[in-house]
Image 1 (cartoon, rainbow, N blue to C red):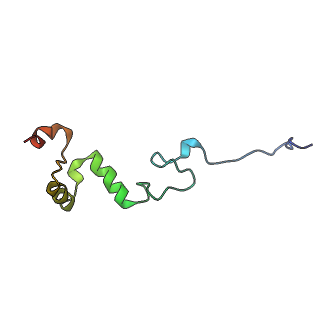
Image 2 (image 1 turned 90 degrees about the vertical axis):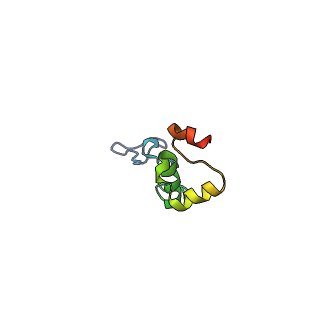
Image 3 (image 1 turned 180 degrees about the horizontal axis):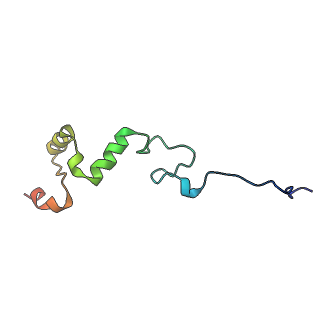
Length: 80
């Protein structure tokens, strides 16, 4: 009979929503822009989480553009 599975058959799918990547939601493979796959994107995530991780080169570039890139508690230094 169609639609009825014989006894002992079961559907086995080891992938689920819980196993998806928390960044790109990839289940089987990550997207190219996922920080777990792309070191440049991972660096950007790290800098957003901790401004002290910003490289000297990037600090100089941002400074030249007039950007103040500090931790939230250091906002007073940006207002000068």
